Amino acid sequence: MKPLLIVPRDGKQSEYRRKKLDGLEKEIHRLYYDDKLTQREIANRFEVGEATLSRFFQQQGWTSRFERRGLPKRKFESDDERREASKERRRETQRRIREFRVSIFGTKCDICDVETKGERHKLAIHRKDGSEHHKEALWRKEFLSNLNKKEWAPLCIPCHRGTHWLMKMANKDYDYIKSQRKLVSGTSKETLKSLTREDYEKPITGSFVRESAKEVRKSLFGEICHFCGEIEEGKKMVIHRKDGRPHESRILASTKYLRNLNPDDWVALCNKCHRQVTWARDTLGMIWNDLGLEKCK
Image 1 (cartoon, helix red, strand yellow):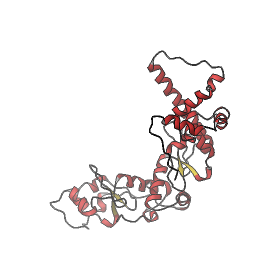
Image 2 (tube, helix red, strand yellow):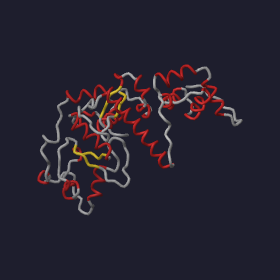
Image 3 (cartoon, helix red, strand yellow):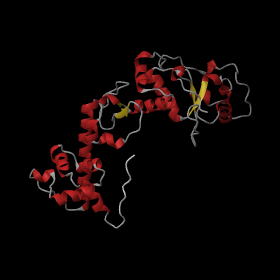
Image 4 (cartoon, helix red, strand yellow):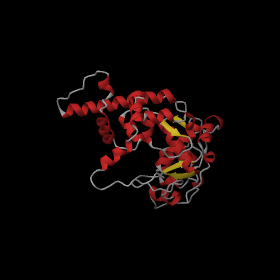
């Protein structure tokens, strides 16, 4: 834990913070002019505000790198033009950082090998041990330059969500999750025979004469997710077939066919857990028993 800084309450907080930079003139000069770090990155490194660092530069008489190149200082005719220029600078900075990330991690997902193209299809940089980290740090050149590449993995958005879900719900590590892509030969949606109404001719779960389909679903599967125990307010729980076999939607929408279901073959899931279970089946080839997930308490 960092030591607590006692800041005086006499209206001189900014002067107090500037004193933290005393004696660091040479290092800050090197970081800004030689290592090409931005003032924001330098301010984050020394835990001061950007305004404090800007005043420090003024005290030292330092000019910006653009002025040192002899580039004229841009003048704006209106506030709208100034704001638009600021947005353009941020977009340009994000573009350079995105190119830098690509140079380190490439453009392919580490699990499904799908190549992402375009700005909308960005790769998420996942920490393999699952520990928490600041998302903003992964968009800073200083942090990216010093990280250990072996501790991180580029993942597409579906694989990133599914990996976090398996690590949290099933306590699986990243190496195990990645290995399932090649080692586990599970059933896929294309190779399974679709279920039809003819598969449910004889009643199994008893007669529900007066109850509606909603009441039958509730009595058979409950109202909470099998895994996370959450209730989807305003949304209908997904009734998932454990073996992954596709089926007609009418089977789960009619009392006539609901009463013919075997509850042991089906499970109620929230939309989030259902999405991740489907991802594990289709992407990793994991069947229901491979997940090793226990019912919520």
